[in-house]
Image (cartoon, rainbow, N blue to C red; front, side, top):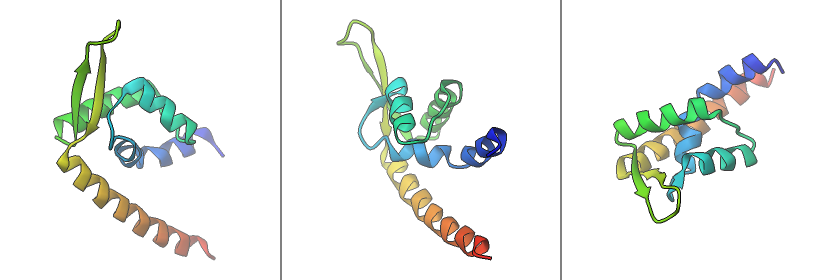
Length: 105
């Protein structure tokens, strides 16, 4: 598949993909590695602005861990983020059903 076309398709699912992985706290690099291992690679130049935007929208909260030698900023879903995740997940399954219907020809 043309990489540009695949990238365009994936952009629409980034918020759902990120929210799906942040029920428990994780830091940006760990999240990126986790998504990549699950077949959904995301460039860090895309991920970090998205995390900041979701935090501004109150869908994520951030927590600093300064116990380690190198401080890390962790993210996790808020109550509003949990609700948004469930709504997006439901919408995804409906869109998937409709697309599958269109592609059955």
